[in-house]
Every structure is written in structure tokens, then in C-alpha cells.
Amino acid sequence: IAVDSSSASAPWEAVFGLLGGAVDSFSKSHYRFRRTKIGGSPVVDAPLSNTARVVTWSLDLGGARHAPGIWTTLLRHRLPYGSENPPFDTYTLRRDDSIAVLHLIGRPVENSDGSALRFARSGENSDLKPDVICAIAVSARVCIIQDFAENPSDRTIAERYSANAARRFAFHLHRGGIAAVIFIPSLPEALSAKALGTIVRCIGELPRNGEAALRDAVHQVRRDLAAADVFAKDPQMASELAFDVCYYAPDRLSLRFHKSRRTQPMADRGNTQ
Image (cartoon, one colour):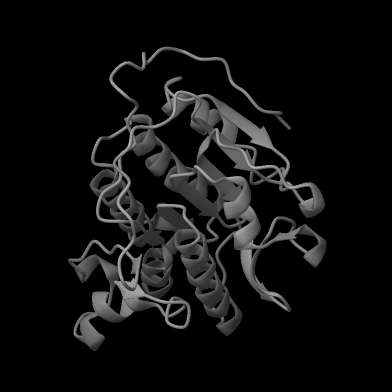
């Protein structure tokens, strides 16, 4: 699905997946969706840097509770992991070439300055714009945006608008240079952790064909959401959330190190919260 800034917010996965109303649920859809920007996105074939690492940026203690355990366990020490506070001091921005995978826990919003990610559940003082994130994580190949974990409620216009904002925010990160961007919508805590684990397990394999591997992992996340017991009484909500999982990527993406790089346990770097 090729989009630009004006069309990125639309729920194209649901539009095409439901075949214009010919089917009524995600489980009857047959597509594995991938988004890219109109005109194509540069392929990323070069090996990962020897200093590559994974970083979580979060202010939400509840949302970040499971992240360190998921990352450290499923990465199997193939990449060092750290959890850090988001860099809100934009007057002293410092690029970090070591960030290969960036995990953001927050809610995409549209504020007075445009698209942003809100790291606190309330208050614009915790917002970061996509161009700031891209200016810091200049070598990031994968970014996972994980919305705050919340128990399901009736699907409202506000929640659908939030999903639109998330698709647009993810587009800006992708256009800004992050090759693969994945959005996990707001889900119950256990389901949100499971979705993150599915993506992390894929990254931990350091796949040569990273695009296809991530596409399969994202499709599995969508299938898990559509079939989750917690949504058994509301299959429409389950389908909407499954289609809200968003994935941007180029045609080719390598998540492997150079052959000379030894894969061995490494000490975590970064400040843990």
C-alpha cells in the first residue's frame, strides 16, 4: 500500500482486507499488508553496525513493565538492550548512531504542531515530533510504536481518530529514514505484551530477509488479535484492532551483522529505568 502524508491516516488495510464489504471480519481476509511511501522506499541491504543496540523510550511505568524481560529474553543476547527516558531536551539533541531498533511506548497524537508521540497519558509536555526522533536515531532500521495498554471498551470515534493519527505518525517516521515502522494499538496488558513478543522474537533471529520476516510477524500479531478470547463477544472490535496494526517497510531490509561479527552474549547498555 503506497501512501503519502495526506493519505497515510486512512485505514487502507481494512478497506482492502474487507474487500469493500464482501467479507465481514479479519479472519476472512487473505492479505499480508505492508505500507511504503509513494515513489518507493530505499532498500537497506548493508549489515548492521557492530555497535547496534535496541532501546526502549518510555515514561509509562506500567507499559514498560514487561518490555525489558521480553527484549532480553527473546533477543537471546544477540543485541544489547537498554531502557531510557525519552530525550525531551531538544535544544541539545545528540544523534545516537548505535540505535538499530527503537521501541517507543506512547500514544500518537495530532497536536497544534502536527503529528507527535505522547509519552505520558496526559499533557503535551511529553510530546516528541517524528523529525526529532529521526534526527536522534539516525541509524534505526526498525521502530516499534506500542500504544498504552488499556482494557477494551466500545470502539468510539475518538479511538478511530487515534488510529488514524498513529498511521500518519508511523508514516512520518518511515519517510524520515526509519526503514521498518510497526504500530501496535492500545490493547489489554497481556495481549499487548504478547504482540510485542511476537515482533521481538522475529528481530532476535536477525533475519537476512528482514522485510518478509517482519511482515510474517505482523500478520501473526493481527491473527492473534482477531482470535483473542477477550474480544470474543465483539468480533467487530477484534477485526478493527487487527487491521489497526500498521507496518511500513521497504522492499528489502537486512537485520543481520557482517559475517565477521561474532554473535555472542553482550552486556546491556543504556540507562535502565
